[in-house]
Amino acid sequence: MKHLEDIVCNLNRRGFKACLVPDASSACERALEIIGGGSVGIGGSLSVEQTGLYERLVANGNKVFWHWKDGAQAKRDAASADFYVCSANALTEDGIPVLTDGSGNRIAALSFGTRNAVLIVGKNKIAGDCREAVMRIRSAECAGANAARLGKHTPCADLGICDDCTSPERICSVTAFFERPSGGLQNTYVIVVDENLGL
Image 1 (spheres, one colour):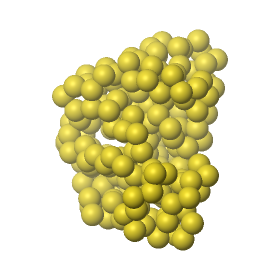
Image 2 (cartoon, rainbow, N blue to C red; image 1 turned 60 degrees about the vertical axis):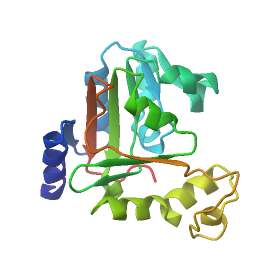
Image 3 (tube, rainbow, N blue to C red; image 1 turned 45 degrees about the vertical axis):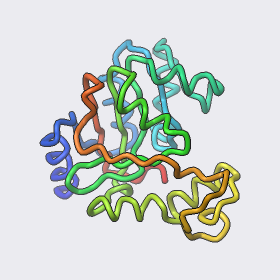
Image 4 (cartoon, helix red, strand yellow; image 1 turned 30 degrees about the vertical axis):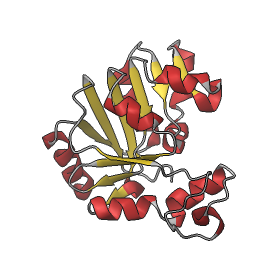
């Protein structure tokens, strides 16, 4: 727990609005407190799905855009919502969220467009530094498992190794290191969860 508390301190030092919660249920409750009645876009995220946040938002009457539930147009609509919720693929010990996308939708939303972002990050995504973060993202357990889940035939999915492929099915096309919150947003919240979430 102390290790995670230090990471939260580093996130806050960098200008993120970060907190530590014990589990997925608590992460959902904290996200609901932050969001209130605002509209919400959700990026592709097993972590967010595991919290049950989408269902709670719908039940509360929030306007929610999630392409996993609402179709392809929701991916574009999500970026202009009051809040954008997703996870990071990795989080360094010194407080840098790292994301890799196939289409760049999450990275775009966290950079400019939406007014507020909420990242929900499980402790399994902690990496020592940016190099370790990239290694984690490109591992068979992260990109490989995600590509396999999506039915993609990439080296990481089929062989369990990353060879920086040129496959048209590649899901690791755009990577961003958020050393500080983007100046294009009003607030970037990071909820660190003392539980494994997502890939």
